[in-house]
Length: 220
Image 1 (cartoon, helix red, strand yellow):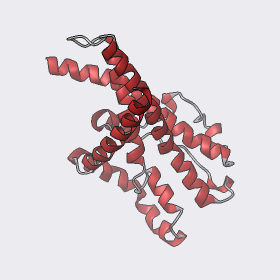
Image 2: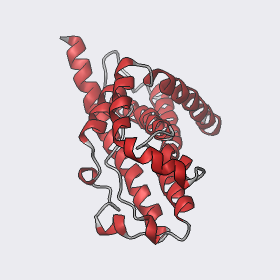
Image 3: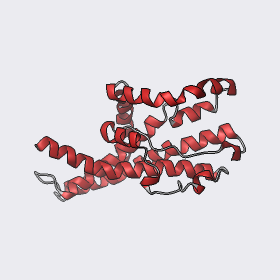
Image 4: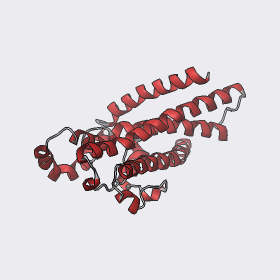
């Protein structure tokens, strides 16, 4: 029973963090495209922090279960871009970069709140509201890092593939295009088996420690 309660609490703490991370990620895709000349995302209402505009059901569940996932892709029309390949890559890069930036800023919040709690004895023998607040700040670091790292994998339909496409000839892109829709199911299988999630979490763990160390050096 206690394990079930802890799992429910963990989901409740994770949920708002996931919604923020996904919304920032997709909004920045749309904003980057808009700044590069493509108004499609703006017309479709994707320049928004409303998570309902961005959630992909499968990717959302994957984030809850594996702490790795994706959102509904922002529609982009490369015909508006001056340099389609380059600008598509920049648009794709904007999402993961926004998550890394959010994770970096959140590491300072986490270190500050944790240090404050230790100094003023705000942590009790049982979880307190302050403990939950500190935990959420820690999740803001780890979940944003997970989203950023995962989406940089150069496999369709992830952002990393759009960045890779900027360096591939069109002949190769035409050969890849018919198979893109199958990659999502392959990724879900690899996540479920731990084949993909294990190395991603290892990378996230390294970056997490770097960010926390930097924050500690500035705040403490």
